[in-house]
Image (cartoon, rainbow, N blue to C red):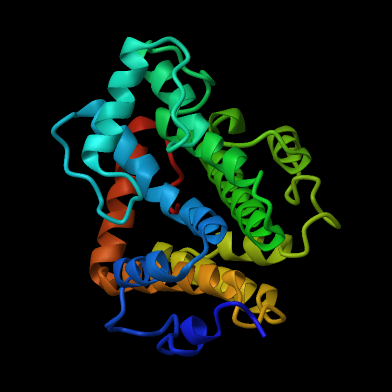
Length: 279
């Protein structure tokens, strides 16, 4: 029996179709903090680093910015990190992931780590690299899958925009390199990714809101399949956390609001580059 029987067995049933959520990511975070071993807490924190990345960049751009409370670090802690990088060459503090220091130093000196990528994507690239070093196979595979999927989506978008994929593809894996270099529909990945055709079909969905829903449905199914044999384990807890995050995002966004957001993004892109009218 898994180490977290009471935790997993007591969790409310959830579905991607849920329209109301009484148990939030923040609620689950507090519960996990009280139960998880120190080692497993580090694994779960890999998920919450997504929010820390957003918070760190916000504070670098505006020290007075409000941060997302779902991150693992407070405003004061992130501010001290930024100040530490300003004052000390090659600072170290084991409370923070090492890539924070790398990124903050590059940002403050205005020396991009990759001239082709935005600051957001440079930070995301460092994040994926960091998470990919996890000692947990399931969590490694989760981040690897998301990196591959996001890169496929980015490559398809770049083709529609007639942009160089170097400006959007993250990571240094063989899969990332293949996506950068191939002009073929399958990006040279046939036989390498079992979910390739699924993702390519999803990119053909014209309705942007439905496209996002289908992507999350794919991720949900992936989580179900890859935790099937993990009974009452940290893997189950990690998957549940991700599912909660998905539902929370959708319950805060109506179909009308979601479509409006996506359309505003496209309109902005049309102002910057020439897009096909049916994009």
